[in-house]
Image (tube, rainbow, N blue to C red; front, side, top):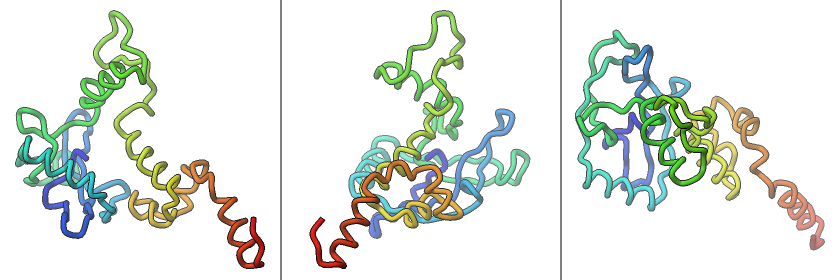
Amino acid sequence: MFGLSPEDIDYARGVVHVRGQVQSIGGKLYFALPKGAKTRTADMPASVAEELKEHAESFPPAEVELPWGRPDGPPKKVSLLLATRFGNAVAVNTWNTYTWKPALAKAGIIPPRSKGAKPWQWQAAPKDGFHVLRHTYASLLLEAGESVVTVARWLGHSSPAITLGYYAHFMREAGSKGRTAIDGLLGRQG
């Protein structure tokens, strides 16, 4: 999300082109290719498109210049949909520490920070970071019956086997669908 540019969104086709991300090494931000160094195109539901339009109207994209490919790489300017109030790229660790985890704690999803703890000292596990939304997305799609091949492509996994390894337990209806298909083939009702 932190590398998403307005140019990555195709409202007419209802898709998002995943072309880049913001990475950090030693606190130095830079633009990089997406996970696995693979660009891809993912489906964008109308509700998400509407939220993105509203966000862009309320918070206009910011032109950000960062190194490309590595912290000491050549500079590249990218218009970002999500930026700090100062027009800088968002660092995911900073976002997790000062925005995401405080919001989760306020909502009662994770425990509040211990009294006297430093701002980055949360009891929450790393799995409670912003990245969990990627897992939520995949889980919801698979529970709804989306093809594992399609989900793997949208997530940028090198094969559906990787997607199944992470998310097979969310595919609860797989057995009953198979039984129903065989019963239908044999002319019986399950």
